[in-house]
Amino acid sequence: EQRIDEMLEEGLVDEVRALKERGYTRDMVSMQGLGYKEFLDYLSGASTYEEAVYLLKRDTRHFAKRQLTW
Image 1 (tube, rainbow, N blue to C red):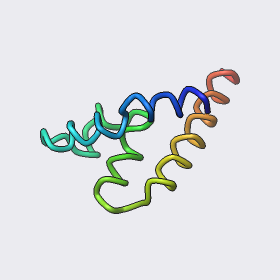
Image 2: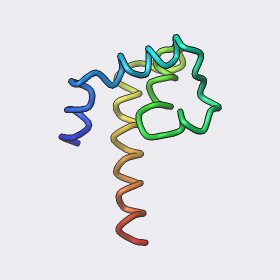
Image 3: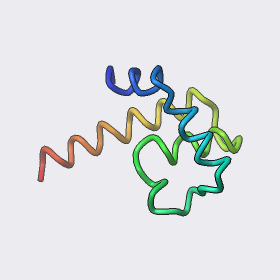
């Protein structure tokens, strides 16, 4: 979770906003990565900032667990 907080401080939301403004959409494979889809939803009004952060942290934990299991 510390790394996620660092990503947010370093401008993850601004990066996603800039990509959205350039026409990148949630259905693009490149926008399916952790962090991108959650904050595209936030920027489009489908979720709150707090929900996006929660989902990013949850999905990252699940991804890490799958990697360890693999």
